Image 1 (cartoon, rainbow, N blue to C red):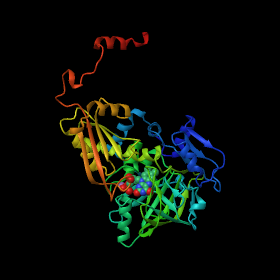
Image 2 (cartoon, rainbow, N blue to C red):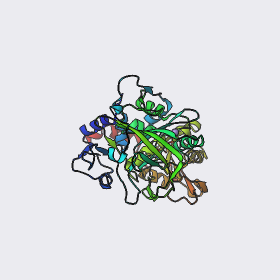
Image 3 (cartoon, protein in one colour):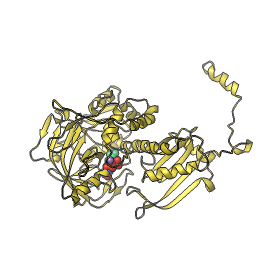
Image 4 (cartoon, rainbow, N blue to C red):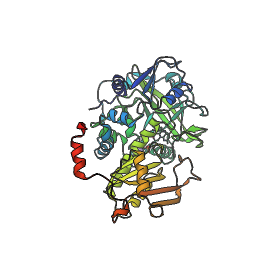
Length: 455
Ligand SMILES: Cc1cc2nc3c(=O)[nH]c(=O)nc-3n(C[C@H](O)[C@H](O)[C@H](O)COP(=O)(O)O)c2cc1C
Ligand SMILES: [Mn+2]
């Protein structure tokens, strides 16, 4: 079974030359961000000496599909099917009954000063403060008691105060608003320093009331081990590095100002909501994990890999010829998808596009290709468009569709969605239909292939 501790994966990475230790002193104000930005596609970066702090910071850990696959214990080529299997076979978490959990080795329950306690980076010039960006927030529905697990950035607002800018439709926001309507705060726990399975699980688009921890178990192949929080009725991964316990208050509107998004631009979403952290627990020697929050491989991949898996699962339920879905890097891991289909019947590609767009609000360009194409190779995808796409029939232009607030070009939350089907027609055939590849005779190919080393 893979480990449930981020630090174990960091050791594996280090052994393989995938972890770089930054020994010189770095300032959490912009300097960590600048180094992570320079090396966004390189090794994971462990900042050992953060000025003013004793806790190290790690970033760029899960910044490629190779790294993610490695962390999940699978071959790069199996990543997609592995995640789909995990979605199909969720495993409920277990609560540790005895012994102190690693994440509770040290407990701070006096007055909390987050900025002093933790090396939280200030990322970008126009942002309004320091943000925790890899905090996995656990909460329970105040009506049903069902758990939810997802990431939202938390800005430090002095002492134990925080501000969260959560999209209206996200479950965490719905829970905070429910609690507020009942005249209560929403208790939260924020786990920082998580294994790949917890981070990826937190990004799955499930139904409200479906517990992301169950998907984490599926990804782990065993139950996620949890420990009960000290001051709130919530459970957190026992092997996380750091946990914050407190509450969010949806009625408390707090101005945010410009904030960076996955597209790499600043956005002003208006006010976020306020919260307070009252207790912090951590390991004896904790590591603070941070995700560089912009158009960066790690930020885009964590969401993209989860979104493509839930989309593929939803599509395959109704269109069995769907083989795979890829959410592309250039599309920021959010906005563009490619669907691979096996010999789609007439109109079936368009149906798949409509379903994908209906499923994921963010998608605005969806391309269908046939399964003889490597959808991870942009050259092959473009080849499909050049070879099989007829604009007058295979293009769908859908103006005025409800957009996600994150879309860089939405106007009043509306956007034009585009679908393209690049597939051969069932009736295609004949020399001039561009359906027969030019090749030497098959027997010669096979003879050469079987003895290629002799050439
Ligand atoms: C690094 C990172 C930072 C994120 N920050 C935010 C955020 O600040 N606000 C937000 O609404 N979503 C944010 N997200 C996206 C949500 O975590 C994601 O959409 C999640 O599936 C929402 O789950 P929920 O509906 O169960 O709350 C972030 C994702 C990542 C990977
Ligand atoms: Mn959820």
